[in-house]
Length: 166
Image (cartoon, rainbow, N blue to C red; front, side, top):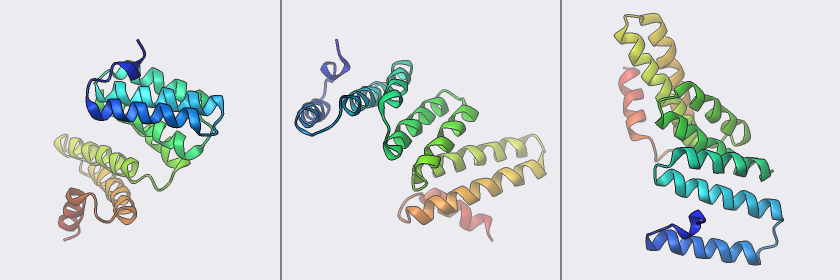
């Protein structure tokens, strides 16, 4: 059964119906339609915690999607899954790829900063003060850029930066 038929809640069903109608009436290529369908199925699987299925769909979507902006969100979501699975290095790779295609993707900047902050904390626990400073500096740089792009977001990062700069 296609994922679009598995959606149980009203909002998901409504989105699926509207998306299907738009795919039929908008002048898009077959590849663009395929990319969107795989991406939509990936988002649905990801929201249900079906990460392996979501990854398969995102990878398929990347095969068909040519728009850099749209690809950035696919890559970002792949990064989210790897981060959720504890694979921070792999997540960073995908976040960086997303930023290469969409430098204004503040969510990716925030997630990169969060990973560096975590690594800084781990270095502190292991009495690696110099390494922790490097990671915290990187986190600060990425958070500053994320906040610049999205000034009303990332309150915790703003607080951390203000305490750090005292």
